[in-house]
Length: 226
Image (tube, rainbow, N blue to C red; front, side, top):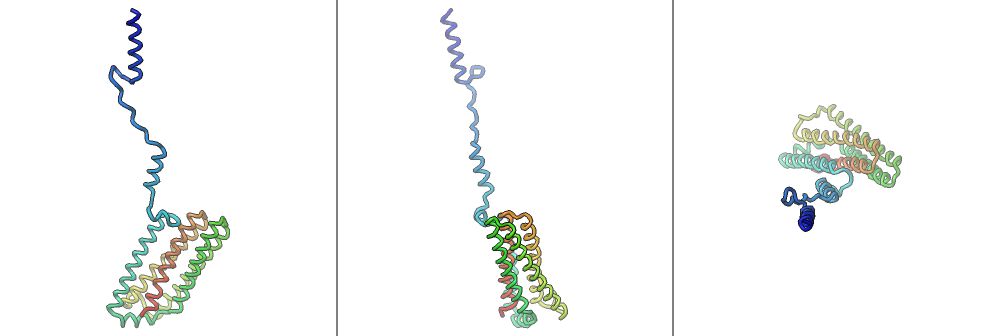
């Protein structure tokens, strides 16, 4: 009787160690993913590749690259149209004010320098100085737009418009599209001056540098090269 009683607890102990249920072994517990691994996977999913190494928000660089593609298509169309009728393009180009275009080039380059200094001062923690440089960059953009509007008014007074010929169709489309980007850039500069974190400043000034770059390419192509 005592031997039988001793066997029962021994068997119960074996069953308890094996985690049996109703005489059968319980299935092993599902492995739990380590929280650190989940964090690594989330970071990898949010990785933007080469764009992650660029200053500012990667979404802005997606916008910048797409806009460069659009302007690249404009430049290619202009070059092809010029090659098909160089005499007409040269005659129309003579109506452009190269001095006004040159002044606007210097204005935007100076404005781009101010934007770069805004990033530098913000990285140093000098928020007030950063906002002053952003304001300087914005003033340059306003001056650019004023000169461009005066140029458009001068063309209108000469009876030159979008439908005058192929040259001026492309001229107004390209410079007008760039004009809109300057206006949008001013909005970005105003927003990042208000919400003046280093990432925001880098993001807004990246767009502004794109505006500068496009004009530096557009000005000689449209105004100077014959």
